[in-house]
Image (cartoon, rainbow, N blue to C red; front, side):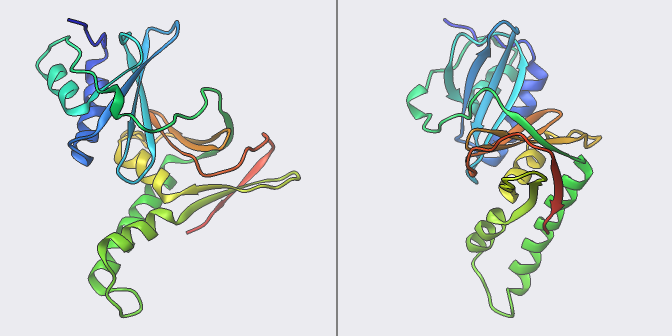
Length: 220
């Protein structure tokens, strides 16, 4: 029987537990980081962003399993790899090389997420402009909202848009940590990522960008 190879059980378990709370049937993809003795754990959240956390240990290759099954194995102190579900993984990954664009204070990212949650509660309770709106419609509109725009100082000034989907990804997956450390905005080809101290969220939403000096513009 093939082992999962993960030695950072606490880190992997925290990541998997949050995944399973958000979607009990979700998958997790294990990808060894060459030469590092670590494995990147990838998953797709219900609001269409990818999240990743890198933990100690060498997985047995690029494999996909059920997150709940791997969590159960780790919780029991086992080292077996659950049944492979490689055919269930349907999402492309961002390129391995990314470029930093801006650094955001973690506390600001957390405030943006909290304000969005408050807006959702208010709209669900009182409607929008006095009219009732469906919960899913509200949620999708809120997630599509551009929470932060980073604009290069030099031409061509192509803005980098950070959606609420990415903000919710890093916050709800616990990637800021208790101290809410700084969060990097990064670009990898047509992908935008928020990279926190304990993991990253990625979304394929922008065109290729060159690295240029930037300034930050919060946008709601």
